[in-house]
Length: 370
Image (cartoon, rainbow, N blue to C red):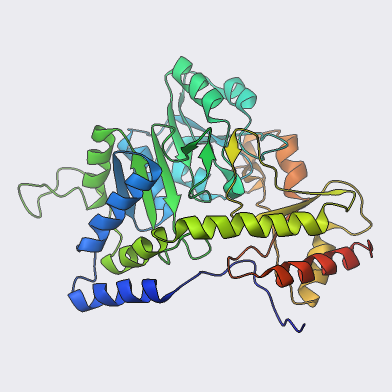
């Protein structure tokens, strides 16, 4: 079998998506007004199991909009996991608040609730658990802590569309949730995001601020500083078509993980994503962690796989290590350890079993297992 190059991820676009997008274009409603925006929001709210869903132009703005709608401001502190994409902390910084990075659970790689409680002080206003790489955080424990201290809980579900915690979909378990629809996510709008919530006041505030804080009754009258965080009708058409296929894509993601697990489970010293008994992991990215010295380092493994036509990417760097945040002297050993031992393997839903078998064979060769 000849394989030239396998990317880490690629979108799955069918005739359904093309048809919906073409219909949106033909309608003439190509900007942020149009029936697909409304339909996408309504259907996404139903899918997640919440009363309200609000589209945005990306996941980062969804998070920023959530924070400002909750009144987060300069002087506040927001607890975030150290191992996540930097946008989680950056959105906090946009408000003037300070992101406080805490360590992760060594198995799920999500925020460790014990570390959350240690980080709470009188300035703390909210907690942002991230459902990293598709696995839910321990939401009951986090919510209990938040309730005890009067904190908001904003779920960062950017990577976890359809993931479940004790039978409930992520994005429905906190004060609000946010999603990203970037091109490599489980479902995509190219660029785009969504806020989900059962809080009508939060929803109305976010909706108001999303459109330049324009008055409902007096057009082009603005009483506060708003934002242009709207999604276009074209993007929403793509998103609605993708949402109608989400179950098949999650099923394929889980199948792909099982193929990897079958091919790599006998290699000592490495491990793949876990799935807690209370969770449904959607395996946005199939992850490989080099837990022991396999004779080949993480970066060397990635380089050798690239030479064989296999794309990979490293885990996120700890946020507390980055120049704009490293002055806070956070000490999160689990985050630092896992970040430098982990890679994301090709995880696109177009992968076939023979592709995964070929990849696992090459990994074994590089690790000198065969």
